Image (cartoon, rainbow, N blue to C red; front, side, top):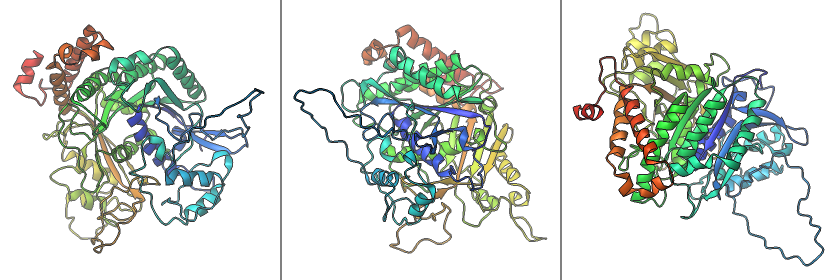
Length: 589
């Protein structure tokens, strides 16, 4: 790892955020090189990873991460982890009288976790399910990198964990630092009793022991940083963690002013055992969380595959080359993690890195703290083709889909945009035409990948400020990333020129090119206004009195709605209007 970098501390608040975060860290682990002789890649891994040593002196790389979840959410994962075990027997007792022990059977581990345990113990895996050459980290140095690599070289089959993933630790590939996990014991993950359902419950949590533990963990990770550029916060938006996240981002703003705070509000497509009242709570939590986390962050970006954040959203977002199940958190979180891998690239690169505060300043101008994300997951490109070839196939509409429940504007109005394309490894960024050949499109006549992508996006957004970054390496998909890809893709995630033979099994996709965009524009004004209208139309004291009984006060609730209305007005364009109806204008006046 390099001697200097701009470090980032990650916070994951809530169960779905930990689902997305687990996939995201697995993706980072795939690009992390443990071998000092391996040429360094484009991504500077020690921006988000910290280096340490086990008690046996073996070097470890663990996430610079604080993850918060509820009681019962870990299953087989130990809160303190197993990376720095002392190996001492802690079961000895000094009582000399009669002793009766009741031993509860631990939850069963799925095949992936069992294989990880075998690797940690140094056992030979004849049928390991890994499908990439990237190795997991080893606890206490039990397995050398060379041994792990030789194991992974024998891999033949892939995991299918759809029926066995119940919590995020069921597919966690890497070891965590003992200070990473915080369990909130006041609320249960399973069951109907003592659930963290309301915004006010989450707000009230950040005091006492929870606050002290968070501050202790923050001080530990902050003090070992040489140049802390900021925090990336993944927070559940639809449950009580929205209230906790609002208080956490406020704490970060007060304690670490001047650092970047990029907050991603996560919402699954659906919740298990939902009811109309729970759906109402989800909308209220999303509304209050958006207002307050946006206020305390450098920018706030909701991330969801739902068709909207209201009680009656449209159909989940469909991607042409994915076959994911929207109801499975294991699936939907993997799609968002792939997008987040590209969205967070600007401040994680070795060269041409852009600090978090600069990314935020590019987009969050004039009080417009909420931004929208879009993504092409995967980016459709034919193996061996050029970037102009791939883009010229999408002349009527951009290839990406909404990732923030905010439809893309149709009139090309945008205040600012940050686009990222990763995955043209070995592909041509420009067209290689023979001398004298007429370029089939203007894109084919340009001389750099940056010019090609800039020209293409400006054809849809002619006047919007644009920042972009191109990274050649794709996202590497290591086990147990779900195989949710279309049969029209090959193992590298490229479109196949010929369809596979009938009855042939689809190839295991081991990498994927991804294109994303962060935008600030008038479309967000319409989106925020719609959220405001939906909540304002409710008689909350009659429909959800229990929501207010747990906080906030009615006056605070009404103030938050007013802040949301004013936030929507920030997205008026220079001519004084946003993309909305005359009735919405009347509401504001």
